[in-house]
Image 1: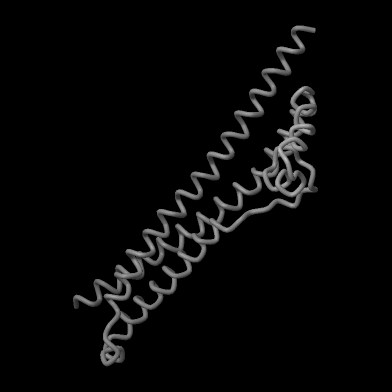
Image 2: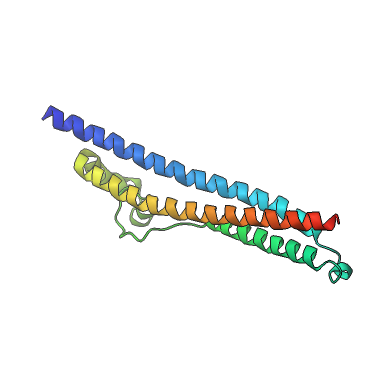
Length: 172
């Protein structure tokens, strides 16, 4: 019996650690998106600077084309990076005792929430199921955020190449 209790306690600790790691991966995706946004601001201003003047576009079509393509990709990368910050929801039936939105929707007083939370905390198997559900839900959120960050970084990288070519062409 003592061995089972110890095993359950270790399982719960592992569950909380897994949940924490996934939450950290979400913060990492948000941080990366913030850096991409900073990069889009810098690269966007450079792309605008290497655009030829309106009267010179016909004489420098390649420079104008590369600069415009770079600027479009910079804007797209910025929009995708902003998309990372949009609220994420996983289709999940309401009722989780651990998910903040379900708690806020369902409980209008701390006493009501506490009355439902305490039995879950006293039942390690039920708490472990709740943890598993929460881990599953936020894993999907983390996956989507990291996918969007990869798209934004790729767009920013290609924009950097295009803008660099336009900058080189502006010197010739």
